[in-house]
Amino acid sequence: MAVLSFDRSTASGRYVRAAVLMVLATVFFSIMVGGIRHVSTEVNSFLVVFFRNLFGLLIIGPVIARLGFSFLRTNNYRLLILRTMCGLSSMFIWFYAVTLAPLAESVALSFTAPLFVTLIAFFFLGEARSTARWAATLVGFGGALLVVRPGFAEISYAHVMLLVSSVFNAFSIILIKQMTRTDPAERIVAYMVLLFAPFSLLPALFFWEWPSWNALFWLAVIGASGTFAHILQTRALGAADTTSIMPYDFARLPFAALIGFLAFQEVPDIWTALGAIVIFGASFYIGQQETRRNRLPPMPAT
Figure 1 (cartoon, one colour):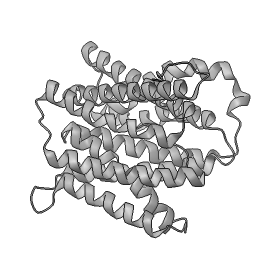
Figure 2: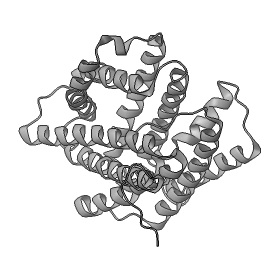
Figure 3: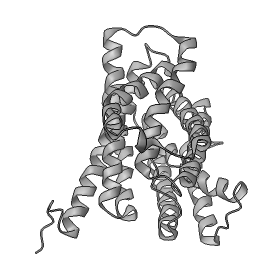
């Protein structure tokens, strides 16, 4: 019987390594989400977003500095600013919504971003979509309805905010798609780190209060875990085919549900799990089709 190994010289070794990296990324992502929920009782969500990006900049900044200014040369400054606005809007809204909704529901509804990409690409960019793609999109939104269950459970303000966050995230993905035509992914990520921190400081100043040392520790945990999740996911997607690795991203849901149960006594219901499975399945199908067409890059981490 063949045994899978971490030997990078073999296809199976690269796949196992990529799968492990992706699962580790979901662990760090779940830690970040749990940290957001915990620290939000003391720190305003606008400040949480700023410190998440600040600590990310402190971690990645030295690497960018070593690459030099020549690495940052681009002709896409307008798109970079628009992407920063959309990405930060998604982050601000999502960080706030996570403080109101159960963690499992927050993660489940975050999987709707690729569904909104399909709608945006059709209505704003005029990109044609097949019948199968539209069917997958409708099925995916049906999964979102399973999570929020309108008519059977109250649709909360947090649910609406989570979906709005996915819309902004979808616009961000579309803009990344446009930029990758001329810029490498590494440069786009570098600008994300460099721009998100100063731009997120501006709204944070209106709610500024110096966090306690305990809160500052958790803000550092949020920044570090979010950054490491992004790095691990990027390396996983670079080590193996996207369509074979992205299903492991679904591990975000059970990890977040576990943290929600252990730390906040949240018990996810069966509808959240079923809805998440439907949403992710539809999103994965859409992502698989886009990968085959080589038109969309892997979705970045939240």
